[in-house]
Image (cartoon, rainbow, N blue to C red; front, side):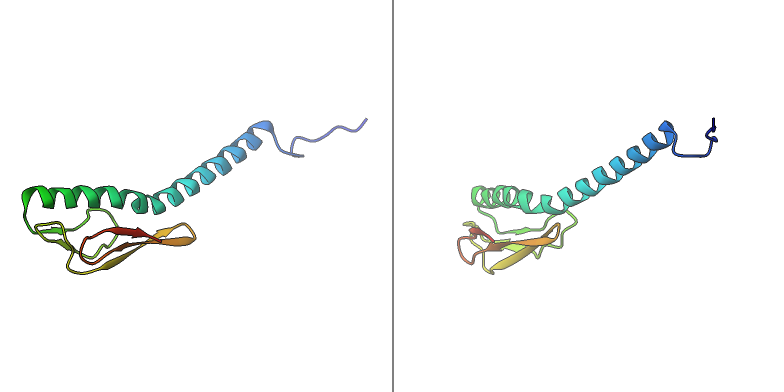
Length: 111
């Protein structure tokens, strides 16, 4: 009868450690790709709130975002109008999405 030596094959503990490492790497990759597209979905809410505040106070305001994205400054008039159209580009994983701020009303167009 042939006996197997101790160093042949993988032990159950080694297999579990390998699966755990692969799972953690996969989860981290998914989280990073989710954060990349998050700004695209949160920008409209922040912009609309800011535009409402400009309308309520009747003041000219400049919108600057505190996130990591480099948004151009958006100037809102006292009646909530925009004097310069903007196109904001958001990287979302392997693709990119755009939000266009229209001249005048400041409406948002999603592409």
